[in-house]
Image (cartoon, rainbow, N blue to C red):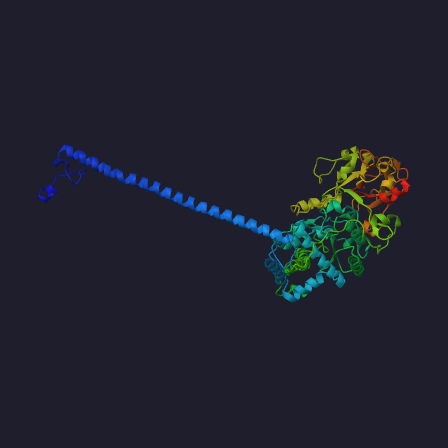
Length: 627
């Protein structure tokens, strides 16, 4: 600065600063360089310090507000707990005024209204949807309808108290299976998908099981409800009208077993075309209290074809299109296409909604009362239909105790699928071969020469292989059975007595080994397939030994509900008078089956798919023994 002020031009180099090092002494230059280095280092140090400080501030900020949030959560949880305890006390005390502490009544009503609105919109508005609903549920007596609606309401309110599931278990024929469509497109699952969100809001578990099997009659399925259906179902289904036509015998027997097999009497859904005799039967069983509710679901195609023209409602569009790919098994004229399944599911949902809405209203105004479960054995009316063979009375219709009818307890073991409990092989003592190969693989003759072999018939195998080409379509039913020829040798079974014997006198439990004191009847059924005129005849080609004594009375059951397309598929095995049971380690009856005569695999081996046994009424029979 001094030199420039005096007009002296300083000497510079490309690397020199504005203050020339030539005009300053070395000591001064060194001091200035030191100061310049210090100044260059200071800004970097300041940035680090600033970053550290800023991080500390941010950390302290979040720590402070996190602690405040935690304290708020603690207070909110404490308040919620206090509110829950208050609600619990309110529920336990008598209701003096309407409360909705468990259910959001307003939201539930809105949800129910939304489902109803969707049904109306889906099926063309108020007029068309109303007509479809009216035709979809075949009307019973007005009193029956009121009783049924009230029962659904009671069911919902009781499940609200117990938190037990509402279980819908569907049995039946190929229609309920959903043949021609995907299994998941069958009407039971359509119903489930409609109701599931509502039941989630009700906080009641909803279970839906489709245990239908294609190509079977009412029985032996009706004897094996505990095998095929969910435990203690709220709803069961009957769908055998295609096989049994106008007869009510199979349906009536099915009803009597359904209401006697479970802890609670289930709602019954009957899928069939309108039939007056069946309407009268259902009305009588509801009005007399045997059934709590009967829903007669119309199985016909009742949609007015004019609705399929022009501006077609969404629910009726593609009415003639199958749900599964074209060419899938089961795409026959008698099977409903997907949109008919969808309509059946919606119609059933509308019926159930009436009862659910009644339950919500009763809860809202505080008018509901705790509903005790009932059902179980007993409470039957005299049968309305007749049997050809009166010796089958107890097995199909029950016994008359004078003041009322009741069913004896029945046990079943079956190899048909879907089998939820009680497989046929569980009672096999010896003589069975269970191949390692897949069930659809053809078994060599060597298996049959070593014992009764788990197998399927040719019709079943071909059908299932064709289904597999389409990915299986989700089906779970399969007609597996034990197949035997004379070379298979004896098949030994052990039928356990499955009623409690704890309250029986010691003498009865340990000394009375007469089989007929413990067992009333035995039934053996074969696969429901027609295989030709030379196939095994169970009545002629089976030697059966019961309790160590050859059975002389073996006859085919010729009742409508136990026949498949006119074929008698079950035999009644009369228990010999001298047959005995084993008493230790548990009470049970030995049954040995052998094939005789000219029976071959080619013509049709003998088959066993179901074994049913009826327990004797011990309290009545043994009273006379003790006297």
